[in-house]
Length: 461
Figure 1 (cartoon, helix red, strand yellow):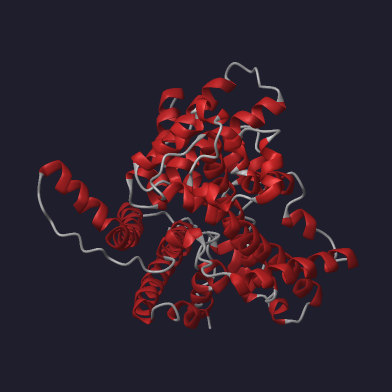
Figure 2: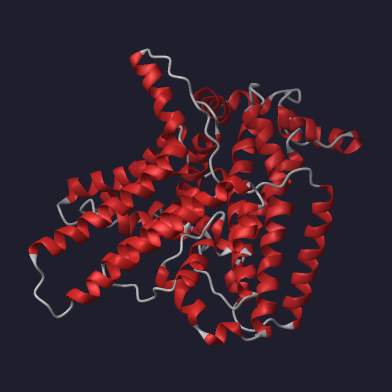
């Protein structure tokens, strides 16, 4: 059924994921069995080398597959610019979920090499890779987190508390996506893609709209994935833990896309040397890890810039901690959130010109006190009539045009200050939680009736 779910989007890519599964299962099984045979024996030198060669070959095959589909246009485009060539860009369509199922299987190969896998059943392995709730946009799961659950006979029993909890979490995620994220998407798109000059309030409305669109879109997906999995008694790892409550950039990455952060730490940062080779090498390793993490999100220089900015911020944070003088909590939160909001501009913008157009508007203080409502893309959504006339008497005209957006932003800030979905679902689903979940689901379903498009942002990655 998960394979049908995947093939429903485009059946021509079904052989691709099946071939990837069979190849990685064969390599991983061979690595695990070879490791088991070597326990208690004196390893021959060529035996260890062969296992490393097999692991390296398996990882390289996965990365080459990902690189071909995801980075061919990027590579050829840059070669054309640097060397003045005119290679035709093939514009290869990115297969659905290739980044996630590739990383998931690289983790499996490394775990097999280390002797941490003990399951050699092809059916369960295939389900581990293709399980539909996490297949499309994560979380990136470890073998040890999921495979034992598939093998357990208790997973096959009906557990009504899990079904109820799953529906509760799913309802929260659906509400986040179709009510909050999709509403902010309209304003973010209008600001980023219009090409028009943005005033101070319009630019901040644009950047904050995307900041909250991305958060509620991706955290909503993760909630829906966890909720859907619980219907089958499968617990997926938590991927979000209120990241906009973070008090420093390191804390942010411990809360945002947790499974990707763990992957980058365990399979990139630590192999590069981690913090074992002195402070300057540690700074380089941090920076390089996040540059590559930015490139993983997409084959454009905008993602590289975004990753470099976060890598640089982590270096600054590591350097700052040496002085042992932490900021006051409120100031630390403001600095962290503003930095994250600032960098999302590069993450969202299609070109540097678009990014600087938004950023210039964010520091254009003169436009904040204009006498007329600026003709910006987002102001077309402003309120009107007598209410607008009344507002003009007590606030700058350029702000009046953005008031519906700012009211939504205030609402979003109020939401992120509350308990997150996992905290709310902790314990049993009592009557008030049931009523709350039904209300969110009902509102979300009403919004889906009017939705023209509801694509998850992380499908692009």
